[in-house]
Length: 267
Image 1 (cartoon, rainbow, N blue to C red):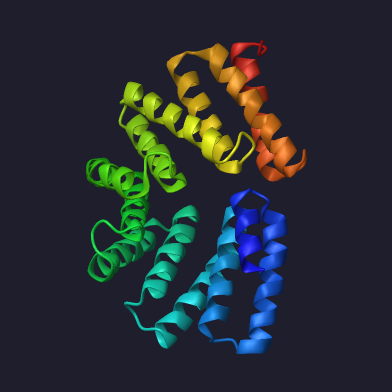
Image 2: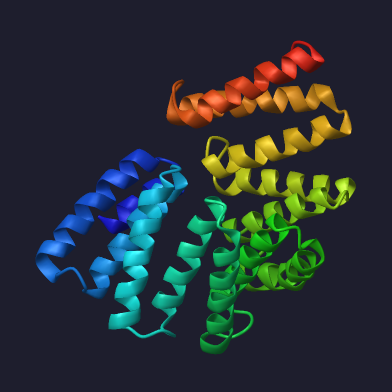
């Protein structure tokens, strides 16, 4: 059931994934107990699905519960405990609790470097997450250094088209844009979009995120025709994925209306 829920999450079918994860968690709590490592795994997986849907308060509560359980059952330096530290930090980052998020991501990175090695995929994930927190805090030089340090390792360890590599590329492009390095940022956004279309499909949520990010950059550059077309594609993709009344769909629709008011109809 957890494998199916993971597959649904990867496909962007988050409501179905949440339902399956809740069922799996209830079953494990009954059969194995609340503190069993497999139960804690289900708690963490459910929290990730909730986070991806914007249900951040419940996601935070569950990640803290998973972390406390793993520290007790597995130890502070166990890879699964370090995973919980990183996952909790991501939720806190999305809530705007950046100081605690930074502290936890540094802790996760230090632990993973020690336990797994500098080039392990989970260590690289921590580098990427820490860099994102730093750039949100305005610590752009340190964030760029982390991104450039990790990019080559991502490509060599996972491959240039791996979904994790493409997420890293997308995040790096966001940083470069904030620094005003628009040409390099556009190149990386296009690379992320093309890779996600190929690896995940045109309607996947991550692909649609890349569509929006590229559109937003192109609008800032004055490339209004292509930007408008991408905004339309973003809205259509969300309508198909989540339906017309989902919060993300409504935001996309409002953004497209804003764009058309400022720049005219999309051809």
